Amino acid sequence: MSEDIPQPLSKKHNLEKHDEPLEILYKDSCLVAVNKPSGLLVHRSMIDRYETRFALQEVRNQIGQRVYPLHRLDKPTSGILLFALSPEIARQMGQQFESNRVKKNYLAIVRGYAPESGVIDHALKEEMDKMADRKARQNKPAQDAVTEFTRLATIEIPVAIDRYPQSRYSLVEARPKTGRKHQIRRHMKHIAHPIIGDAKHGKGNHNRYFATHFAADRLLLACIEMEVIHPVTGKPLSLRASLDKRFTDLINRFGWADRVSECLRKEKQ
Image (cartoon, rainbow, N blue to C red; front, side, top):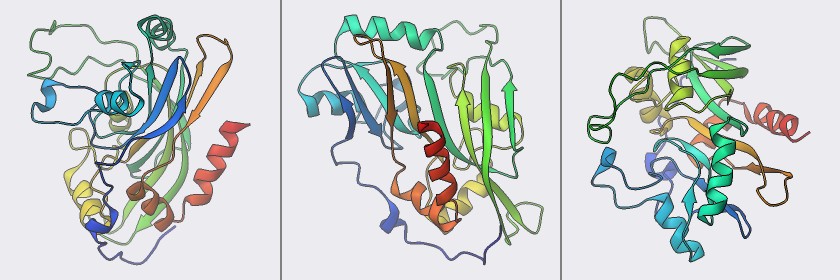
């Protein structure tokens, strides 16, 4: 699929407001799930010592009680973030996450035409942050890491961003089977299809093009679905999060909205 050379969009028009309350996707006496926006840290960290807003604090203030994060979601990644409402529930749920029994589906826009589907089985050494991990063991062995993926759609833009006269991109559904740090980002880079907007593992010229011409100055990776076993009922609990405006604008602009809808319907069945 191709389109005419796109014209820059107004960045002001597309940026989300970060001072609005977080969208609560689910809440009961045990758990609360929110739709975390891109750019929001889960909790206070040395990674960004000057950040003043955190998902943990925001959720606590919104619902008026303490919350306990159950998993990580990178600052630039958006989507489902699940908290426990007590230490006991946090311990129970932690076992599900640690044993990789939680199902998670992500959407990502990557550079190039990714394979139609595949399994990336590539062990990862933990990436250490100079500030946050300065006291951590530096010589940890690589850990098993597995990600399944499916290509949902492609587009070719007649613009020479790299060394080719056209630029190609894919919409990918990624399903991590393990929970390593930056796993999807590093795995997509490993197969030469880095995620757009990834400042650490992607390509700057493509990231800058999307930021300038599509007002997409964020990592184009979102956790849109998650399934856990409820700690009290023992039944599956399915969570779903919508994409933010910047991500949605790109999906619509590239003509991919139907493919995203099909993906969501398939997962619901």
